[in-house]
Each structure stands twice: as C-alpha cells, then as structure tokens.
Length: 245
Length: 121
Image 1: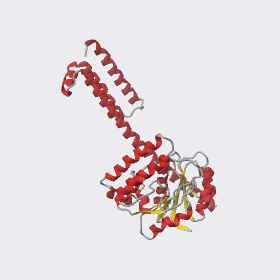
Image 2: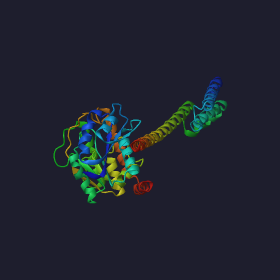
Image 3: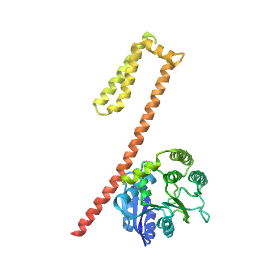
Image 4: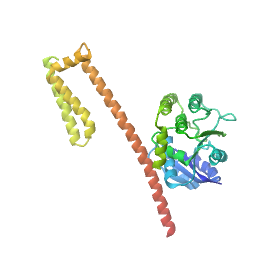
C-alpha cells in the first residue's frame, strides 16, 4: 500500500471509466485525489462513489489547470512527501507506481517520468502526435543534457518541492510537456525517466487530434520551450515557490 | 485636408468622445480602458481643427501623402490596442484559473467540515 504519495487524477468527462481506474488505484494507494475539470457527465459522483477525494472545478481549466488544482491541494491540505499524476482514462497501470516513486524515495531524483518509449515498444500513436512527441523529446534532451524519450507522459512522480514549483504562473495551463522538463532542469532539479507500459485508453479520445490542433500545439510548445530555456531567473523562481508555500 | 472635410472629421471625433464619456458614466467602460480612446478622440479633433499639423507630421515621418500618414498612425494605434487586449485577456485567464482552483479547494473543505459535523451528531 502506497501511503507516502498523493495521487492526483485529473478527469474531464470520464464518468464511464473512472470507476474502474480508481478501483485499481485505490487497491494500491491510500491517498487518491480526483480533480474533476468541470465535467458534465457526473465524473465527480462516479469518483466519489469509488471512494476517492474529489476536487470539483466549476469551469473547465484544461489538463494543466486541473493538475495545478491538485498541486494546490497537496501544498495546502496534505503533508505527504510525494505527488504522482495519473490519468483517469485507464491508460496507466498502477503496478508502475512503485517504480515511479523508487527514485524519489532513494533520493536519486526530484521528478520521475513514466516513459512509454523506454524499453518495450509503445502502443501505436497517430502520426502527427508521434512526430510532435519525438520533436519535443529531442529538444528537451538537447536542453537538459540527457535523453528524454517521452516528455508528454501524464504519469509522473515528484517531490513536494517540485509540485510547489508547479504552482508558479510558469506552469502551462494546457499540457505540461518538454517545456516543464526544461524548466525543472534549469532550476536544478534532477529528472529521471523510468519505463512504464501503457494500455490503450478506454475512452479513446486524444488530446491532440485533428490537423490544426497539432500544428498549433507544436508552435505554442516551441515558444514555451524557448521562453523557459532562455529565462534568466529560474533559480530565483524556485526559491520564490518554496517561500510562498 | 480639404476645408469641406473638416466638419465630418470634427463631428466623428465629437461623437466618439461623447460615446466614451457616456460609457464611462454608465460604468460600461472602466476609466483605464477609456483613456486610450479619449486620446484618439482628442487627436482627431486636433488634426481636424489644425490642418497644418497633419502636413507637418507627414513630412516628419517621410510620408508623401498625408492620407498615408493618417493610415499608418491608425494602424499603429489599432495594433497597440490589440496587444493591450491580449495582455488584459491573459491576466483575466490567470485570475479565473486561480479563482476556480481556490473555489474547488474551499468547496472541498466545506464538504469535509460538514461531513465531520454530521458524523459527530
């Protein structure tokens, strides 16, 4: 039973699948917080019925904004040393949680990403998505000095301090990606990837589908990465975040 | 500017100024946003009443035709105001995000407190 980490599960209209996800999750972890990102299908009720704590956002803030609400809860209402982000749609396997938390417990890292591409072939992704991931993985690797393979992963474990840094305005409201990795690395945090296997998503909806959206996303992410790779005050921001909390 | 164009320019500027003042009084427009528009109205009146001014500005920026000088400045103004709106929008978005997260946390705290109270009874 994992009792040293708060598992944050952002969910938007996942009522059909979140019960199963939480059932699995609560079997291995005690503290699970679902952040209902303004769902209209009763996701919050389904999550509560499954036995999780639920934060219900009155407006849809998008993935990053929902995660941040969870980090706020972690800073304010919980004293657990670690925070884990976990998707609601059944893609993530709770069996990997200990592998994710291991490096944190041993003091080998501050931010541990679960990578689909490290060891074992990933489930097939749409072409545009794949291209974006590879592009940003390359850029992130270049910036942080080691090989990052899966910057878009939603499965990550972090120390309390990192989750507080994520309360800064610098944290993206849409999808934390390579930009966040660059930011943390430049702040002096240690980042590690561990291999995880992902299952096909139950709900089958992708965050980056269509033609225009991936293009917009690539452009936006490029700007964000350049911004965070060139900003001069990230060390001070790190201090600011720990003082504020 | 031809003399017969002057009344139209002055009337337009006065109408614009009147509209801004009306909106401020009705509290439909906050003073800080009205400032830019009031300045535009004042500039148009100044240009209409003092034709030599536009000619001088035209020479100053190296334009050939006063009309192009006018268009350049309108474009620059519209660009500035668009950027200004983008800034305002970004700030509003940040504030909405903070409020939404804060409300969710408070709601959760209240629910927990009520649950505890009910359990005690």
